[in-house]
Length: 315
Image (cartoon, rainbow, N blue to C red; front, side):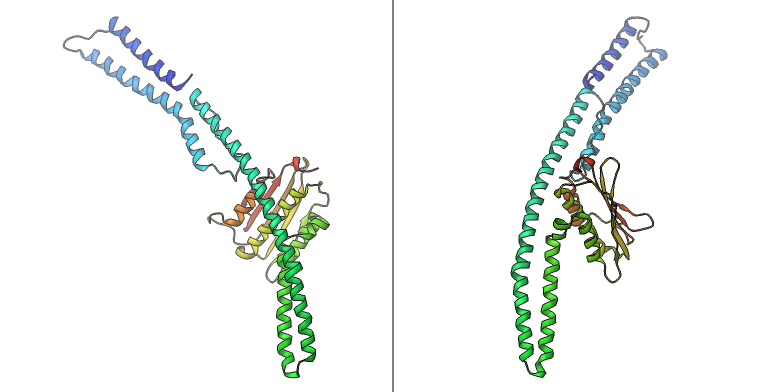
């Protein structure tokens, strides 16, 4: 029954009962007798109380819908308002949930296109860095070597320092190119790419060790890229902000074909700080794959970044 008919029926029933009592055993005398006044006051109190109860239960779903609308986040799919209440309210909640589903689907398609364009741009920039800037710096190193061989003894040390600075710049260019375009992922697969990623982030004060399931289902290239990029971003956040000593990506396959990536560190944790661009970027990557991303405190301190991709993406 709709909320309108609930309130209308209650008021009508109250008025009918009151009229029947007035026409029947209950009468109002002049002056009003105490018993008659008590009956009228009790009736007036009972009708608003009944209305308050009906409205409280009838409007409760609208309050829940308001809270759901205030906390809705398309980067956290799956949370929907519970359908309950009168017909109008239930219809409104159903329409709202359908709208969220449609927006989430459109957001996923848009995110997939944006990330695909981003990856194309990354590959282009990495190729230009490697082929153009890298070759230019390599030629500079060769010229510096010839200059060092011909330079007077007093200048050889300075030329050598320039050589070392140029070589360090060339190594940094190559490292940036590898991050922009993970060639090892395309050539050797996800497991080798995650091991290489762990080795890349291992340095003074931070040990990164990959723990990979030896038997993993075949995954589409897009899904492998999502797993790799989320692990890369999580380790980047660990290296920059966590102050951790140990970290590592762990990749596991579930019995239902699902794949779960866990990046755990023993750092200071996220605390009450709002999510930054890094975590938002990971959620954007998880959305087109239909994956679930959670960032929670790790047992014993630190942070757990967990990405779960359902089995439908395995093949």
